[in-house]
Image (cartoon, rainbow, N blue to C red; front, side, top):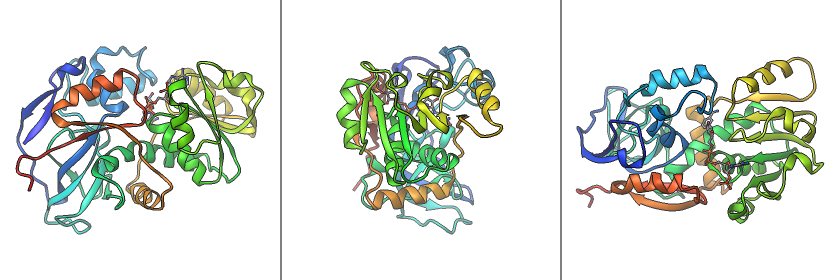
Length: 336
Ligand SMILES: NC(=O)c1ccc[n+]([C@@H]2O[C@H](COP(=O)([O-])OP(=O)(O)OC[C@H]3O[C@@H](n4cnc5c(N)ncnc54)[C@H](OP(=O)(O)O)[C@@H]3O)[C@@H](O)[C@H]2O)c1
């Protein structure tokens, strides 16, 4: 089968189209004929992992070390990237009962990657579910990353209808899903992003938008029940005055000092700092499908690249101009 392979860390050019062996499903696995995959933060970070020092890494040192053990410190252990996919079940192992050949599915392989290929096996009880009926394969391939994070995060903070929420990084993969879900739960949402993406964030349902290149949300006197900081561009101490009493400051990227803030604020009432680590559950893919089909969650695609141009897709994302998601279409030579 065709796959995009990389054998060394580096710029997008390390991604090369190769012929590799087609996988065979084990007893508890499904074999998926992939129709679409995506480029998200995880793919970019894993492609370049060996060139990122632990100081530059977006998480504390222990997470960097875990990443190194998983991905490989000097060269990639797993040579095929791609952590999201959508496609059709082609075959199932003898013990599989919840899927059958022909089922249209979407999946998130998490850091195990290997979706930049024509086929991938997934365990039946992994992050794989029936694809939303009203989505194309490309849309279904980009939706799990942000949706799973958003569901887990908003559950952790027990979001309430009427809550005032600010998302610092509302136009990205995670922020756009948090925004839509927070609106679904009845929150009033302010989205923070840069000038070119203000309209995009409004179109996702934000009640207000703030351009971080022109205004510092910590200085405008507004207060929120929940602030979600996606990239760690602010901090709990900087944003404390923008939280209501008992307000929560949730970070999806954090360093040791943020952990210290979390420990310090974890006792008693008052404002809380929370470092959120995604705990993804297969049932959240079922909920994702339901929300998409009910029109509560959408995935806006900016560009679609063919598998052969995956390096170009990575280059485009790193150029910093995307407005929405980047999908990769996986064509099959034998497609009828
Ligand atoms: N905790 C976990 O379990 C977990 C899991 C997955 C990922 N992550 C973290 O999530 C992060 C990636 O998130 P993503 O995929 O949503 O990234 P993304 O798609 O690249 O989006 C980044 C967002 O941040 C905004 N932004 C950029 N510079 C900013 C600034 N100075 N101030 C405010 N906002 C700014 C961007 O707005 P513009 O585009 O308009 O500039 C955009 O909305 C990574 O740091 C990763 O560590 C955490």
